[in-house]
Length: 333
Image 1 (tube, rainbow, N blue to C red):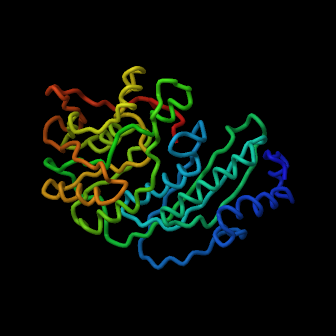
Image 2: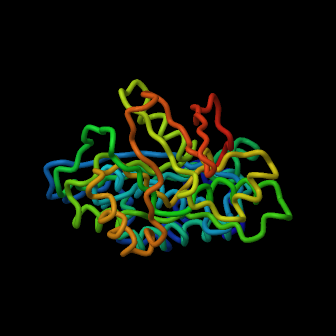
Image 3: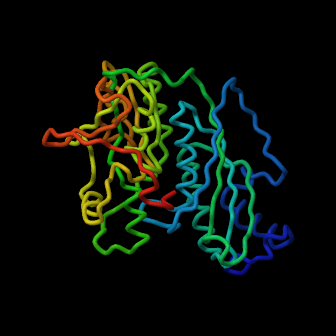
């Protein structure tokens, strides 16, 4: 087989079938990806969670991950923060003519490793090829199905509830931006791309009634999620700057470029709002997993400034965290 993707693969002929059988199914698993029009699933559940997402990141390879692991982990996390147990994924590839076959193999191998680590199966998919200059190497669309084993749902948020996060802020967005722009002073940056379903499952098992809200703060970061929560509400949220975990590498790049890390994307973080009385034990449960080793309480729901998210600075001042009008960092997922 040639070492590049050919436009002829989009015709549905022998070349496309050969690529599907000798590259895609060979890597993702011949018993996993079905060649029929749909996958037939046996799902013994009354309630399901269903999500879909499209990944167009550039560059497609970055420290800590790539578009393949990002597609799997991002979809798994969208299900997990709804309280679902991720089970099945689809994978649709849009490949640009001229894309290197070795890079496709590398992406698929990364997807396979991420799916195995998260305990999910990639069960159906599709492949299309667009002309040279009509894409950006590779785009991936995924859909995911998760099983709701327990009656987890959004619960009313009230003043006194605490805001939790399982680690450092802004790793993914700043890493991708630095890699894209070849910033020589950004050594040490690594994306936090990871699946969170095992951590969240562990927390829910130990504290089934404690969590009122979960979200993965991807595009727009932590500050954007908080703004979504408080919009139109009769409460506000205050973050405590002294409790935020921001790596020095991330902080340094942000200070030089004038970027607020609270608006930078994360791909391995779950923001939770929990009952005040249970906050410490939820943090402890998170810390019992690798993904939650650096978990901490970072803020509080308050009756002050309803509808606003704000930051209490290390010196005791306060500033509003506004909702961004447009994306601070495009093409980060």
